[in-house]
Image 1 (cartoon, rainbow, N blue to C red):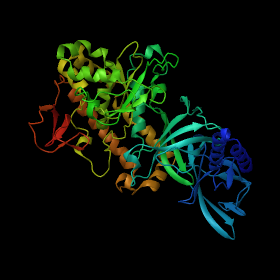
Image 2: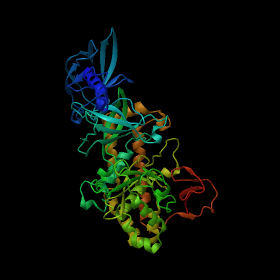
Image 3: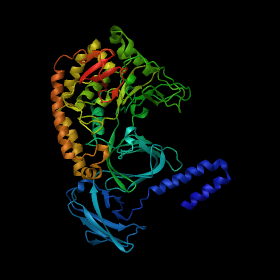
Image 4: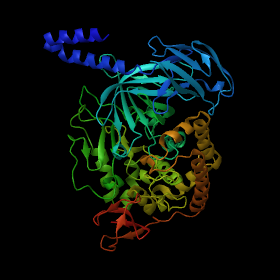
Length: 572
C-alpha cells in the first residue's frame, strides 16, 4: 500500500495540477496505517482487544448478557503477532477458552514469550463500546484514525480530522482532553456516519468530563433537557429538533493508552436544531445560530456599544455558528442584536406586550427552571446557543444548551467547593430577560413558571426520576468496570486538583444534593415569586471587590449580576 501511495505521489510531482490530490492521498494512507495498533497481538472471537501500555492490560467489549455468565471464546494470534508463545490463565494459545463468571472484578492473566523473554499482561471485559483514536493531536486538526468496537462486534475503522476541543480544558496542566472529530473518506472529503441510532453526520464530539468527579454530568443534564424541555416555536414545521446534545458512554483509548470514560456525542449546530438552511441560489439567509462564549451582552443588559460586523466570525462575546463566514459572507447577527436591544431598552409596557416576538418564552421558562433545578450557574448567559429558525418569517430567537459539567454541586474547578454550588444557593435569574419577565409579569409569567414547575415535579423533576437517571449511569460505569478503570487512570491528576476519584462517594453526594435541592425549590415555588429577588445597586453604590456568580473577579465597570460581600447584586 505504501509503494502504491508513493508511486501516485511521484506521478503528481510530474503533473503539478495533481500535486494536492496526491499529497492528500498520502496523508489518508498514513491515517489508515494509524488505525492498525502496534499491539495487535491476538483476537478473541475475531475481535482485536485494545491495549493499554501504561498497565500492560487488554480490554475487549462483549454483550452485557454475558455478565455473571461464562463466556466461551476462540483465541488466536494475529498474523503479524510478535508473540512466539502465549498462555492465558495457563492455557496455551491458540485454542477455545472459557472465561468463568464474567464480571467487572475478574481479570485474566496472559503470559507471552517474545524475543527471548516473558511478559505478563492482564485481560478484562467491558460491555461499553470501545473507541480508539490513533494519531497525534493538538489544537489544530490533523489526520488520524478512529475505530469503534461495539460489544461482541468487530471494530469499525474510519478516518477523521481530529483536534482538541475547548479552551481552558487544553491548558498545560489539563490531561484528559476533549476531542472534535470530523470524519472523512479516502479522498479526504467529509463523510457522514451514524452511531447509536443518532443522527448521520461527519462532526462528532468526545466529551471528557475533565473536571467532573462523576464524568457524566453534562451528558445526563443534556438527556434530561431533551426529555422534558418544550420544543422551539418552529418545531411543528420540521421534525427531529433537539436543543441539546445526545450521546452514548464509551471507553476511549488514545493510541495504546487508556483514556477512560467519555460521552461520544453530537454537537450543537444547525442540523441539531433543524434551522432553515442558507439559500445558495438567492444568497438569502434564513436560519442563524450563535454561541455565547462569555457573559457581557449574552445577559441582555445593555445595547451593545460596538455594532456587529457581518463579515466577522465573532461579535463581542458571541461566536457565529451558522451561517459561517466561509459559507455566507456577509452573515447576519441582526436577529440576536435586535433581541438584546429590545430586552435592554424597551419600557415595561412595550416589553410586556412584545417580548414574545423576540424570545421563545415557553422554552425560556423551561430553561429558567432547569438552571434552578441543577444549579447550573455556568449556564447563565455563557454557554447558551441562541438561534433563529427563519429570519425571513420571524425574528424570534430560541435557545439550546451545552457545557453542563458544573451542575448538581460540581464546581468548574475542584480546588474548592464554593457556596454557589450548594443545594440551597439562591435562585438564579442572571439574564435580564428573566429579571424583566419577573418585573413586568408579562402574560402571567410568574404563574406560568410556578405551574410548570409543579407539573414537572410530578414527572421529570420528581425525586424518583432524577435519582433513577443518575443511578442508571452510576450502575453502567460500575458494573461494566469502567468506574474502576477511570479511578485508576485519573485519580490524583491535576485535572481534578489532585483529588481521588471515587464514584461511590460522588454518587452518594449527588443523590443527597438532589433530594435537598428539591426541598429547597418546593418551598421557593410554593410562594409568590419575587419581583427579582436580587439587590439593586449602581456602580457608585458599592466599592468592594466584585465577582461573577462563577467566582471570577471583574472590574468596577462590569454590569450585571455580581457577588459583593457575599450578597447577590444587580449592578446597572
